[in-house]
Image (tube, rainbow, N blue to C red; front, side, top):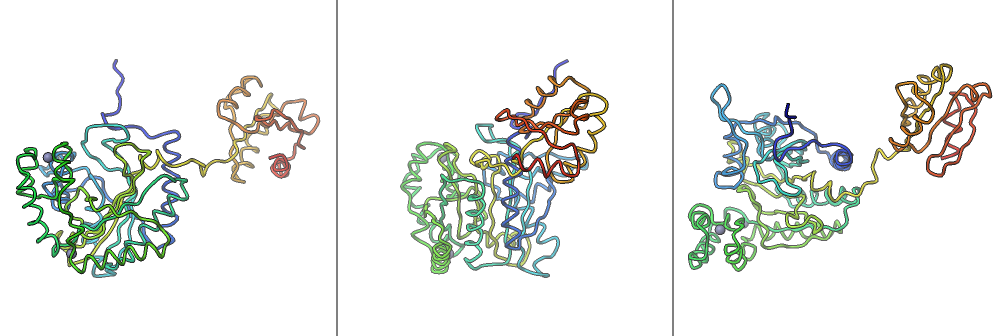
Amino acid sequence: MEKIKTLRGFKDIFGEEIEKFKDIEYAARKYLILLGYREIELPILEKTELFVRSIGDTTDIVEKEMFTFTDLGGDSLTLRPEATAGMVRHYLQEGLYAKERLAKLFSVGPMFRHERPQKGRFREFHQIDVEVFGVEEALADAELISMIFLMLCDLGVKNYAIEVNSVGCRQCRGPFRDVLVEYFKKENDRLCEDCVRRLERNPLRIFDCKNTQCIDVAARSPLLYDHLCDNCRNHFDDFLRYMKEYGIAVTINKRLVRGLDYYTGTVFEVTSEDLGAQKAFIAGGRYNNLVEEMGGPATPGIGFAIGMERLAMLADMRSISGQLICFFAYVGEKAKNYLIPILKAFTAKGMTIRYSYEDKSLRAQMRYADNVNADYVFILGDEEINKGIIILRNMKNKTQHELPLDLKSILEEFKKYI
Ligand SMILES: [Zn+2]
Ligand SMILES: [Zn+2]
């Protein structure tokens, strides 16, 4: 019979990658909790309409990339392609705007997009999503960047840039749209079919086009950054000033636009050349109209998502679980009587311990100890029991020591040799 495998673009996460995932989550939670963010878990499946309304129906995600299906009850459902929409739904459904207005939330879990699988890109991928609702001030924008900076320090990520831009508000976008449409109309015959259509519906999407001619036309277009209204200009200047106070370097990238419709004001991406062409591994921005557009009261918001698969490729592993691995090798009935007491003593003290479940020769057990990368092996047989000792073998430098066979002090004695 043919063996069943994972779906295309889906994969199991195990070994070193899951160790890194746990370390990334650990580093993120540490700073999120210090700064008062609360964790929340949202459903993976939501009504399709939630994403169409929040992400925008002319975006690539909604047009081409969602896992959407009709369920047995006839409803259109979608596996979440990103987390912000669900966060906004939660904020409105729980009436958080009435209770506290300010809500600082984060969530960890899988997202789904039906993209063409490529290096470091999967159809199921994992994000840590962070959102702040109810704060207009640029202090919130700066706080998010400062947390990202601290997390990346903890994870040993060095070669990266924090790219920032402002994509403006309704006030500055209206007039700028006219400037842009005028420019693209002049270049109309050089744009691809998709972009000619985008020009009518949503000219900003032209910047996402992968067509080389369109990229070239877009690269020479006027920039919103140079046409910001006073409010947006002041907000962005405040943000840059706060980043200076934090002592964190950011790079202004006037061409940075995010592939979602809901962004307003500050947007940012953390990028690394080590990732190749698709170099962003953290991305986010402000969405001051989204809550209102989703049927709530006018509420500013800002957030970001960490792509865990991509960050895992950059994280330098001094694994948090990087403890010494101990192995207990026992030979004979009498020695086996020590097995469970030793397991209890080691785990109670938070020490790792490995052992063989079956009675095996000492040679076979030593081979097994090698396979699990044991740093130290405790060896016990009849001869050692008669002498009242246990042998401690250092697997790295091959030295051996005799420790007294006394469960109460064995770990104390062991520490003298690490
Ligand atoms: Zn503005
Ligand atoms: Zn195009």
